[in-house]
Image 1 (cartoon, helix red, strand yellow):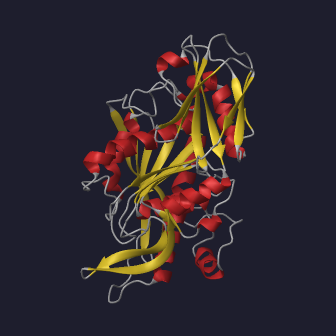
Image 2 (cartoon, rainbow, N blue to C red):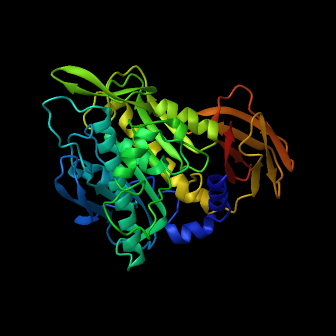
Image 3 (cartoon, rainbow, N blue to C red):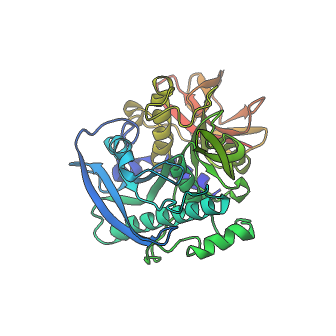
Length: 419
């Protein structure tokens, strides 16, 4: 319900958002900046690794140069590498791409497994490094809020700090966004959490600043248990290969490669299961499934499905975040036209919703229903009325976009959630 209230506020106070956040129908979803400034190797924490060594934690910050907007959403990105390898420099291109759309983009360090490889790390070892990574990401978010409270050098709107990642980085982002004290965490995992400083971790001491994350971009990641998800958790957008052989698309075991063999390490629940649970809870969510693919993250970084899927993945990911900041997307010309006002209720709903118009116009009304991938699912016409009924029919549970088109060119868009 909290997320729905935020969404409706964004829709009905869109002009205020335009002034503060630069929501003009292009920013946050199109490449509108060419010059990007950076602040590299900004330290946000320090902690002990799995092997007992001290590691300083740094982040690289990318942001649009000569930007007139003083409050910008930020995306904290975490790299992939099975919690064994990788570094924040892997994310330079993705951060640059994010900043070109008007975001402040942050690539972070997190601690990796640095124990002995005389035998393969077991599930407890991987749970430990994954929880360390969660604490490191939360420390980076606190650092951004601390800086924002002390001069705000990166012009961040702390109401919109998002987290995202690839593979192990996506697992890190999912944990940072979704794991909290209300979750039914098993005792053996809770022990590991407490040994690493609790849910906030102990990579920095600035606990007076929040580590709250407002949406998660999950590129081929997972959550240890979707039973930990609840209705107060953030929106989530996922992308996953349906036959992923490293991080499972549904429930299963994450694996690593050793000696040419794939070895199962720890049970997790992937993007399909995450999306199903989000639908059950009424959380705003989206999912792109890469069909008939046994590869891991095949849609970026030179993967075999890059030509077919990469543009769609990025377009829809950033449209999802745009809509969290600005409300449902509309073009520049549409934003300049006063929109007829209306609301959808009840929302979420089981079988039907109603669109109530505060001032209904003359002429026939054209209505369309879309999924989050932009596919038109239904189109029909209505005569003007104060209240219009929209039946669910055979639609699966999930988030949809209802569009009302008027004869005078005006357009109204509202989010609809069917449980």
